[in-house]
Amino acid sequence: MRIIPVLDLKGGQVVRAEQGRRDRYKPIVTPLSASADIVAVAEGLRGVHPFSTFYIADLDAIEGRVPNAEALGRLTAAIPGTLELWVDAGLADVVDFAAALPTPALCPVLGSESQKDAGVLRQFHEHPNLILSLDFFADGFRGPSELLHDTDLWPNRVIVMTLAKVGAAAGPDFSRLREIKARSGEREVIAAGGVRHEADLRELAALGISAALVATSLHDGTLTGAQIAKLATA
Image 1: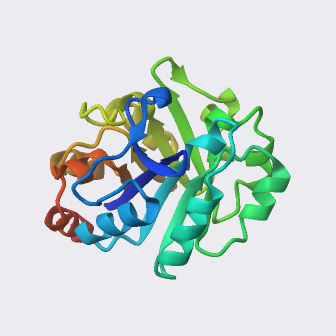
Image 2 (image 1 turned 45 degrees about the vertical axis):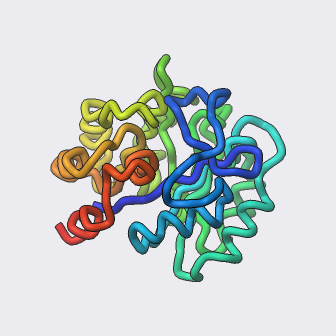
């Protein structure tokens, strides 16, 4: 079971996510960092565990505002060359995706909420760097229904993003994860939203979930470096 820390970016700073209600997101206050600066928070998280991958949501880009390119550039310059970044920047255009895919150490995330149709996924779903995020809000799936129902379009890695669970300490959406895992074949399914502690991660692993995107439990200390190290070898 891989643990992948999340960095939600808004206004150039890392913010604390709360159930997908992005208008409420505030700069993060965490014992792991003296500020909400992306490099400082990433270094604080790597002080908990030597994570090899980070997931980054550029919320400004996703919502059609100016992307946080400067913050991402500083993180890329500061991190070890072996670190991989999964980045959802709201890309929904074939040209933009084609430009992002060859970038070293960057895996572009195709978020279903940003797509008008299945065109981008249809063109690039076999590319090894592409990651699909199936985005679920409180009112259900957001995005073209083809992305959810046509599993032939799914790439090798599929995130099940349950926004209503993010930052809510309510536990993952096990039933939805179980259903999507059953349809995924040999693909990697990644859980996002609601992970509280080691027990949640062990239950996810028992379902065959490959990895989990985690933020709140790392900052609040309910998931420790020792537990992560144990899970990595389980």
